[in-house]
Image 1 (cartoon, helix red, strand yellow):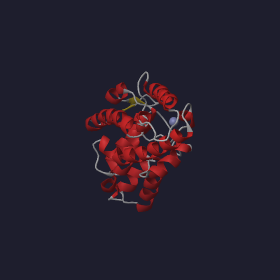
Image 2 (tube, helix red, strand yellow; image 1 turned 30 degrees about the horizontal axis):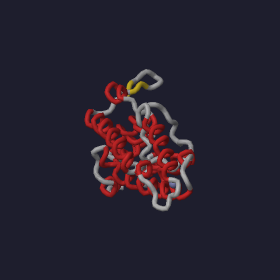
Image 3 (cartoon, protein in one colour; image 1 turned 90 degrees about the vertical axis):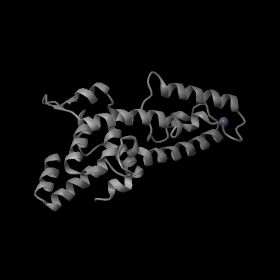
Image 4 (spheres, helix red, strand yellow; image 1 turned 45 degrees about the vertical axis):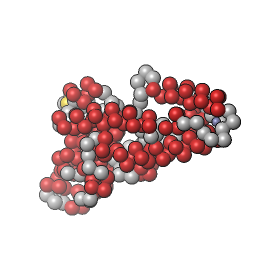
Length: 210
Ligand SMILES: [Zn+2]
């Protein structure tokens, strides 16, 4: 795919380029709904430890920047490893893929901002009591347990994660409904902020050229 995208761009083989761009966009889409759909099924492009870095480098090379936010997110979500950011990640053939210095920086800073901001946005419901909840003490205690499970030993990147039925344990129905609402609006906000976490221009700007 990388070779097709480069060739298509280089020799202006428009159909080849367009098809490669379309395929890459399906895996690293630019709307939350499409991301969720892609997240649920298997990747068309074979997943590998270097996938995110390959896509980021390819995006820089070809100027197809709209895939960058989800490619960075994919690395933070699935395979974040600080050593990998600095030293690169090894392919099965022994070659090493490494990010450009500005992307190494974007990846580290983005990860930290995702972790910090998801607590305020995606998971604001862990810190919010619900009006008309008649079992406040029990629900607060359940929120405390979920909070501790999600943050220890180190917080996982779950900023865009859809609602998980396991989080309903111990909460009354009123709190479940309110929490789901907060979770979904928080995820949407995280999606809109996603490019900014990685020092990228907003979605509208990233999508302008395509
Ligand atoms: Zn409740």
